[in-house]
Image (cartoon, rainbow, N blue to C red; front, side):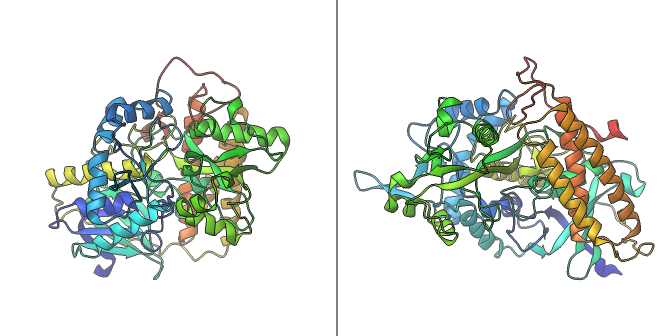
Length: 535
């Protein structure tokens, strides 16, 4: 039975930018096990188009980047965390360049070359460094190549984490995290991963919504597991909806990068009129919450299925050079963006809240860290500024790696994790209920906990989520688990936490807009939930 126990110094749950950056910054003396839910890199990092926000231009400054982030965050950013993150941005970019990330460059008037920086919503300067319109893919591939040379890092593809293991869950004194159970999708068996340090790098929870720009892996697994283990979560009412996802039956949530608007693309109504000037003086480059609400309002007012984004006036040469992937994908779907506008709609994109951490990525449980989109660091406040997400991933991954190295832990042999017992359950012949509940949960979150909310809608969502959670618990008690079921279980947990946070916030701020409280309160507070308060 020992073949089901995997031991390492560090267990990383997730294989995106956050997880890979942490593994690469750790000293090679640390053995690392990295769980990949699908194949390696199948996460939000790989699909990120825009870029990384960093202080690189001669006219830019740390203070300007900080000020923009605080402004977009609508008063809820932690100024200390914002400054901590932005001050490391140049070093992070230099590190990526040293690794070989091929960022776009331009030729200056004197014949020299410099990085091509673009501008996105909320930024007062061009500070977004990018690799055409596939920055995440370029970074992910580069980090992955370097991981291959690390013989201390072992990848476990097709493994889905089930739950964290703590001293408390074993009936021992203390809440230290000492590992996790994970389902091997190839063998259908649950295995034990024992570790001195566990790092949650599993991404956000945008799959809780019916329409999202995220890959299928974004089901809030890390947030839900940390909550069940006893960690606080915060600000989960702030779900960012990207304003521009391609509206096409075969597009499958294809994101249209904000950098198009940074380079001059216009948002148009079906009749060809621009409309963003009615909502914000920054027009198309207003923060994402403002643009998404404006589009949502116009669509509802006109009863139309989409609005349009037009960059055709920039010319074919410009468009094909700067946005080759978007151009190619749209052309495959019969849309030539060099000659016509593309239909777009808002879609769930980023989870601004998550597991409460400090600047070292530490959670409430000793030995447990959370980094990237699964965490709540205080950087984003009530609304994430464009291209700050990849920066956060790598800054906090580096910080967590350094903290792990400087704080040695030893797990006594007496911490023996019992094997997973599925002898009292049977294989399910009711998988249709899983798929049905999955669809229902995502639809009700889109309808009741979307871009515009009311207390009535939130209460309705909460009642139905509670019913779903009871059905999920009954299924968990009687049937063997599957990947789809685990994702449903985690999404239902995070959906409930999102609604609880939203009901606490009796104001409209940033990404949380409610018709019952349309004004912004003078009080500044985060929505923090503590597991012990709900037991």
